[in-house]
Length: 161
Ligand SMILES: CC(C)(COP(=O)(O)OP(=O)(O)OC[C@H]1O[C@@H](n2cnc3c(N)ncnc32)[C@H](O)[C@@H]1OP(=O)(O)O)[C@@H](O)C(=O)NCCC(=O)NCCS
Image (cartoon, rainbow, N blue to C red; front, side):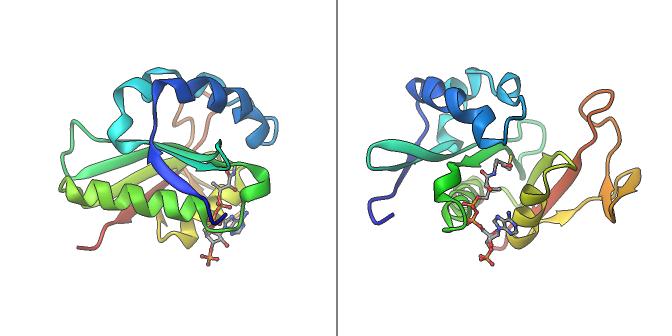
């Protein structure tokens, strides 16, 4: 991955990303949760990682309008062949830096309780799990957080200075 580059996302990245999204998430239907608007209106805080001219990872995030000291990572994914090489970590650190430069002190994100890899990844990245309503396999989970039956694990990370 010597040629890996990280750049801001572009509207033209929507099609290549959305076409692989469900595969990268192990066949789960995720594409409805990532509409094109993120590739248009959140470019400053969303990134594509490219290797040999193709997108091998991406992160979609934004700065909270309501809480100026908070940022949110909505989606991040890495091509299965490029995992466990530090790529998502690089994308997250890039997002932390941009967020910090905008005065943010806190980053939030959520994941599904079934996504054990994402839970392990976020804990390794220094996130803590926020208190939910119930425990699933020892993990605190917010019940029906994203609609009926859509429980979520809520993550929070404080950005150092
Ligand atoms: C979760 C995901 C983004 C991680 O990407 P990645 O590029 O493999 O992650 P990294 O290599 O940067 O890993 C960073 C740290 O997390 C750890 N980690 C990553 N995946 C892990 C896993 N499946 N189990 C345990 N630890 C894991 C790494 O070991 C590393 O820790 P280290 O620095 O101590 O070695 C990737 O597996 C993925 O795209 N999954 C499908 C999409 C998804 O679930 N996204 C979740 C966010 S919405």
